[in-house]
Length: 129
Image (cartoon, rainbow, N blue to C red; front, side, top):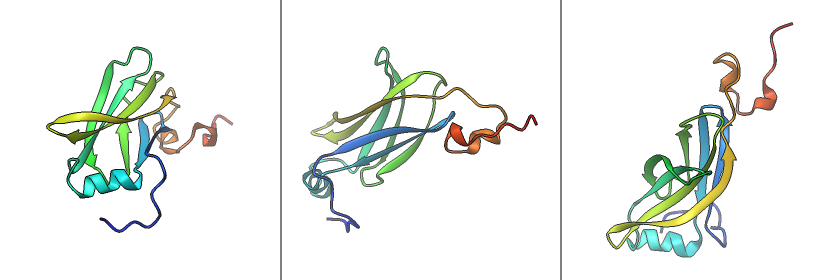
């Protein structure tokens, strides 16, 4: 079992957050039993994160990562839309859905590119003074 800096949570969780208009931050945590399943090779060594449009559940984007990475940045496919993430793990020869995130809105783009580098739109300042 990998060395853990903290005790695993009682339940698995997957959270999706908008970082800026062009990027989402997604993080996941697994319970002790799920960690054991990955460590014992009952589950594959990686997970697949799939991004869906919330309105119609149509696929928007997917990306694979190590199961214990715990976080990932995803490019926003289209600004101004609502998204949900799902985490899949490989078990018995197929990808199985384990977790679904909260729904978030991708904010519309701010002004100049340097403004979009900030983590939150509330920190943007207007320079039209």
